[in-house]
Image 1 (cartoon, rainbow, N blue to C red):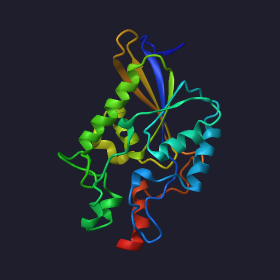
Image 2: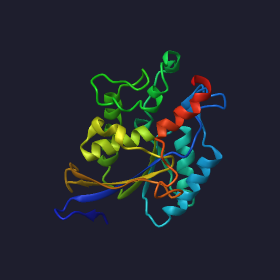
Image 3: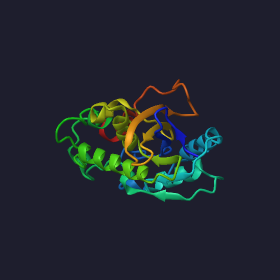
Image 4: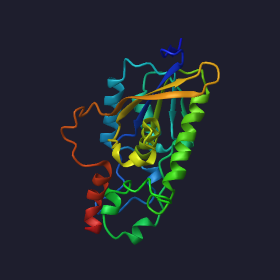
Length: 239
């Protein structure tokens, strides 16, 4: 049976995760040729196993990932032992940059703080997909997911940018708050969505938890932003 809100809305829960640790940069500071194809590192697989234990008491009746290898591998680790089939929805793929963006790189600040101007008219990520188009794609995917009124609690394994777009939409901040929602690898966010019981219209959204990481729940050892960490690894090449 679905949970219900005080006003009779159907209340459903989305648990959305970022994929586990990967390496987009080699030992020489070069970006990998195809960031879409990177697998999890050993630490990323361990993170997924830790999250598996952390959410063992939570019930999921549907599982979705973006379909990129790092989300498939993370979803397999987090949901191992549940017998759930994992669907893929390309709407939740990460924001796409231009393959040649680093040829014109003037400063590593462009990497470390690439999300700060997401709300500006026409802003693009790394000379690739526009933030507005990306947000529309992700939010559209989320609404497609909610059109199926049969599930109660879904596990969605996606990406840092995707999760930021969902959090921005749910909080009402849209792209103006995109830069503010940092997402550590293999983190968990929890969102409740209230819908009209007959029409399915979304009435309200409530963020229950954000960027929860069982390997460092109070962020004692986290002081760099996710993009700052990528920029740090690129120093060997770009300085």
